[in-house]
Structures are given as C-alpha cells and as structure tokens.
Amino acid sequence: MNPLFSPTSRYATIGTATIEDADGAVTIYLRRRFLPQPEALALIREHFVTQGERLDTITAAYLDDPEQFWRIADANRAMDPAALTARIGRRLRITLPEGVPGMPDG
Image (tube, rainbow, N blue to C red; front, side, top):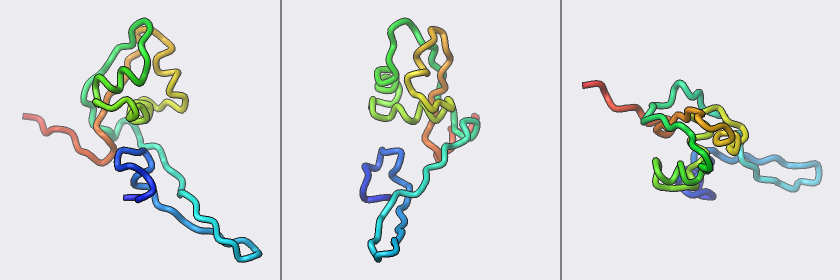
C-alpha cells in the first residue's frame, strides 16, 4: 500500500518513483495507474440510470461510499465519470474491486 493515499483510494496500490535532474534535485512522482479491463472485474449487479441520478449517490447506494465513484467508472470504461449518468436508461456495471474474485457458483 502507498502510505500517501487512503486504502480506499484508486492510487493506494500505485508505487512511487524518483527522477533526478541535471542539478541533482530529486523529484518523487506517482507511477502511472493502468485501468483494469472491466470484463476482469467480478460483477455484483447492474444499475439502470434514472432521471436526475448522480454518480456519487449511485455509488453510495451500492458501495456505501460516494468517493468510490471511480470503481464504477473503471467498471464501465468511463474516462469522464459524469458521462455515466448523462443518458437515462444506461446500464452501469457495479463490480468488486480489481483483484477481488467473485463469489463461486453454487
């Protein structure tokens, strides 16, 4: 875990690196975060957008934390989270976080 971020942050598992310039000044930076493949995320359920819904309220309803909106964006290949609720009737995938397997059949 990256101690610079909350454990629920999208950057919690992203490491840091350093670069030194010609004068010897060292800059610490966050490594690039690669988006997961939505198909690899375990589906919990689907949600169909209704009039006036916001992504934070949808996220709070399903994930109990409105700041986890990025998980729904990742699960639906959204670079612009606001686009997820722009169309009434859009189907949103609600998934488990990356690396958490789904429930076994049975």
